[in-house]
Image 1: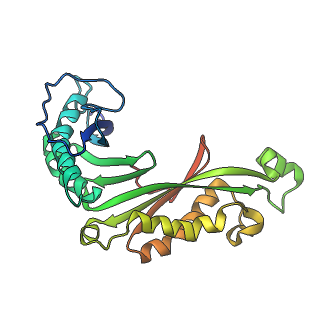
Image 2 (image 1 turned 90 degrees about the vertical axis):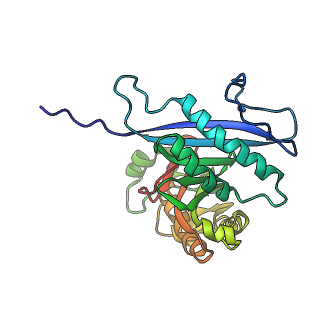
Image 3 (image 1 turned 135 degrees about the vertical axis):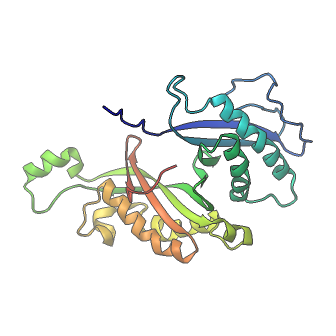
Length: 278
């Protein structure tokens, strides 16, 4: 009997370090004593640029060691390329766009990791990130988070009270949530380099005008036309948010990849479901 092929897997690793602003860059020394500080290594007590990179590698694990790639190998490969790159950027009169840094970082890191590097995500803030995939280094995925507060109720007019109570429980009555929304947009990097790509401030303005202005501090069933005949479940809210944003983002030069909505910290919905997620 022929054994089944071993499926590929994805290993992710967060690599964090700090670059002192305005300081001369010392060569990266992988033999430097390591710190297990959560903020990363190397660190500095000077005013610094903190860098948080999430690296995803794909492939098949070695059958003997069980490793796809050693995390020490990932750390060294990323730091040797990224530390001088971000140090130079921090001292530039006009720092390059983060998407350009990722595009510069990817090829050398990919070679160092023997082609196993799948994507790199730069977490600029805890809620704003840029992702570059090795399969398409011409576009970057911008992900920004927003929030709004709204009330709703879940019920089907044609159902009995007992059936609505069975399916929706207490949610069949008026109640509210503080929703969190993640908007993911693909943007051509050459447009960013020219200065005419969809910028984060432009994206935020679109979300404010097309989404938050419509949904924030509203009763979704009564005040929002999209929910006049549609139950505002978190699944439908994600779809409506996507539809409210898609055309305006396209007109601005981006492609809306997905929208994810959290109703609570434990419950979220993403639309469309087939979208890749960094």
